[in-house]
Amino acid sequence: MQINFSDTAPAKARLIAYLANKDDLPARLERPIVDGAAAARFKGNAGQFFESFVERDGQVVRVALAGMGDANATADKRAEGLEKAGAALAAKYLTSGETDLVLDFAGSGVDAADAAAVLLGLRLRGWRHDEYRTRMKDEQKRTLATVTVISAPDGAAQAWADAAAVAEGVEFTRELVAEPANKIYPLSFVERCEERFAGTGAELMVLDEAAMEKLGMGALLGVGQGSEQPSRLLAIKWLGGNAGDPPVAFVGKGVTFDTGGISLKPGAGMWDMKWDMGGAGAVAGAMLALAKRKARANIIGVVGLVENMPDGKAQRPGDIVTSMSGQTIEVLNTDAEGRLVLCDALTWTQREFSPSLIVDLATLTGAMIISLGHEHGGMFANDDDLADDLLEAGKGVGDKLWRMPLGAAYDKLIDSPISDMKNIGPREAGSITAAQFLKRFIENGTPWAHLDIAGMVWADKPGRTWDKGATGYGVRLLDRFVRNALKG
Image (cartoon, rainbow, N blue to C red):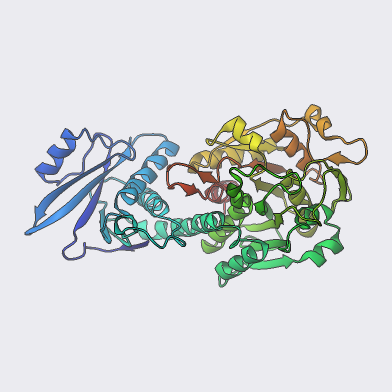
């Protein structure tokens, strides 16, 4: 969707939208619109929508009102209301037959940052993955292509340029997550990143299986050994901060399809496992957003990319593998594979880049969905300041987190009688024991947080700024974390 700024509306504009705060309609609206809004009980609540038609200069014009909510709400609630206003416009007109929308900020009382928030909600809600839909009826096809912004507050265009970089990152993550596994697998994931990061100033580094074997990544390679698709480790480096400053590292689980391996998942619902690379997708999208907006920070994004398939060469329940760290793991369940991918990725990241802190993201456990549903991602951390910074960042952008416990009592649940550890604990505390497993691979007391986002990367119903499907969760969270905690 193209968003342009102009001093005046295009000649013969057919569709014009205005924004309203709660209980405060914009001035200069015609009486039929004001009376119609009152009759429809339009109050300007966040995301509320009203539409009417009026005659202007001899032409019938379609007029829309979108509610921004309480102008005096807290910063987080205000941002949510602004985004919902933009999203309401996109949801209404994306397939309406209208190709152009004029968004008039006159009388809205918003500043540049507020205007960018409205536009971000509009653009993100307007994203859809129609690549493989060839028989849509006309009324199902996307028509809205251009939004012309008029009467924008000073600085809005610049604020939007920054927000548009974040939108591009979210959209890239959604693309990666939405694509089927015959289109996104380790090699093609790398190829898409190479295409999208070209010209951004970011540097990409790729390890093939031979390189990973030489480094001793037996845990990661064990997961992918039953697949025809070769595994990869991808690092994306953005060095926009002070030269020599240690980077922050984001590490993502990239299981591009997860059958469970020999510990085969039930057939019903297995198709959802195309998005088991949601953590890697979030890291890639966040790195694209940071590179596009030229973040003033040194960031490394690392993703372990594998496909987990059952095969004569696949690892078996009971196998013991040696990780890059030298620690041995008894693989009791081949469907607890994400932690095996992450542990080697975490070790390599620490030894290659010596990061000041690490945040990993993974669709790691179904137990997290049982615990938190689809409202929060679970967070585990060994550092309170890092945890607080992530909680604040998530709250600010709507990528909500809930902190979960770690502790020695849980750690004992993954001790193995024949190796250093086993890759699963008992049925209870499944998400916690997975986090305890990863914690064993954090070296030298490095501040670390693990985000289990299994319930957040895919939605069965529309949300704040997304339709059904891939949400892009994690991109805005990491971007806001960099802005707030790193001043980047």
